[in-house]
Image 1 (cartoon, rainbow, N blue to C red):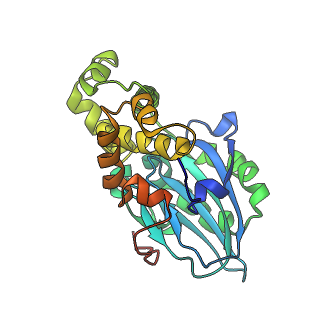
Image 2: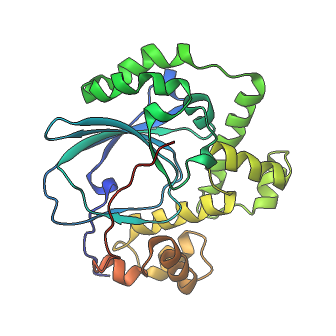
Image 3: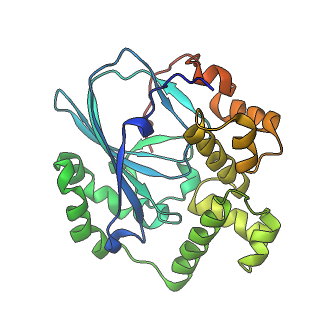
Length: 267
């Protein structure tokens, strides 16, 4: 299988796990070095996490943004060379940190300072910090600003277990997963909506497509389909086209949808 490299943030990003003290709220930190070549568009592939992005342009402009979970791929052209740090929130952490349910951020980009949660108070400091100092700063500042009761902790733990189960290659039928977690299907859907911003079904679809992207060019399509819970190759192709905007063949030949500008909205 011949593939053409498509420029995505994931291809450029290096990641590290969040320190233990921050893991109730953050899963990892990603770093994208300064991107000077603006001739090619970026493919922003679907993602299940809400992310705080600390963006620094080569000219010195800095900003702290929040990107909600992305249900479908978007394609954009950068306006200026920039680097960034991406802080991925753990399932269930959006409301304690940002003051809104994750569902209010789905497919949106907003300024961190515009949100009502305690993390907004750190927006200016985070934007101005050297990227290497971000985690140490958050370890000092974030835990003392956040609080949650036993019910909120239980919901966050349940979401973390559900997310791991849905990400397994064989997947779990939603009714069986709800039964395993001792909640109703409706409760599970509501927890996913508020804590992650997606339905359990769409969460699993995004994870499968990301696995396809990770393994394309390594294995035949039929093997990738079988290994990731698709009925067959045609099921993989249809799901990929729905989430990525083009079928796999076109995507991996670099035939992408037209790029559009990134838009930040007022919260």
